[in-house]
Image (tube, rainbow, N blue to C red; front, side):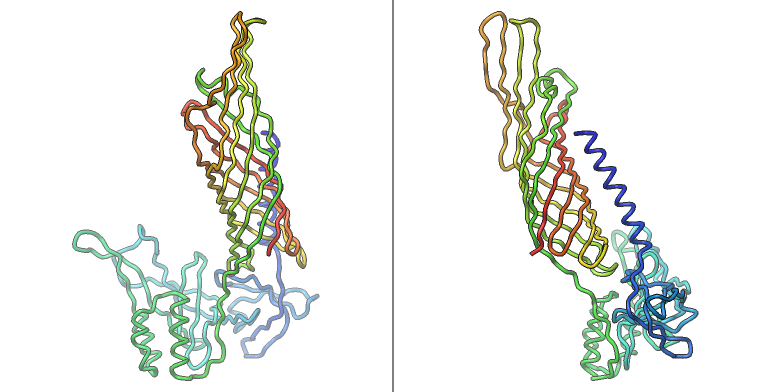
Length: 425
């Protein structure tokens, strides 16, 4: 069982590497158009990556069979794909750190110039653009091509009455006040505007509703998708006990046979936006159980011996939480890998030793707890590999739990392999 578990983990890690490598190399050409420097539009196909951070280069094909052409912000004016607009720009971006332990005491911004594709959030009488750099820091811009104005925002430290406190340079509020000043009723909302997509999007919607201005394009934010379903299958559990003193040898030395049991659960898969929806947070309310029987024998002579028949078993209700990566193979066929943790609480427990002792007399048989104290909470680590076709899925999953022992000198581990069928409602 141990060698099989190790082989399964190795296989899952190997396929994880292959999937991530393939995902990086995979192309996803979708109908799109490129706007040339002169303003002409070239229709064709663009390798759409559902970018989390703004791209600095795209691949474009005139036809589905033609060779791809690389375009950078310096060679085209912009592009449109999957109802998303991007425009070439050379802009300043604020580069101060955002982590609390790295903030400085200067409210003044520190900028660096980048040439990139800005994402269009609003295009019309007033424009709003977005740029997420290579480390995921967000920047927003107003104005028109090719002159873009950075909305200024920075977190910094200042000395408080007793300790350092976090302050904010929110000059972007004043910039927006001047930029959107033809709507007089927007001032109160502007004061509470935060420097993020959701808040600025709401502000510009309010502005357009207020002024009835020309709105040629508005970015539609992708929403998180929820999927619900059920899984069921079998588990193979191998209980491993190791001890460091003689008091638990009669338990630890038992050769516990693998336990085959039914398992089932309900799941909620939270599919995240962007990155072509390949990442999701997979959650399960899951039931699993096992019964491990092990025999320990100490024979001193034919009429002088001790036999311990140990039975250790648990049924758990578990909350499993995993990060899942799904890779499209074709049409409705997907392959996925996931990993995470399980938190289980024991609904029922078997903790029994039947002891048979003979010392030159008739055997004496007694029953007693295998362990005087046990732990009903089990923490485990999960890794799985599977495939999904339409609403059906199959997964092979490995789990390693910390078992039931509360004793320092008795270590417990419950290794499980699951074979699960799933159905999405």
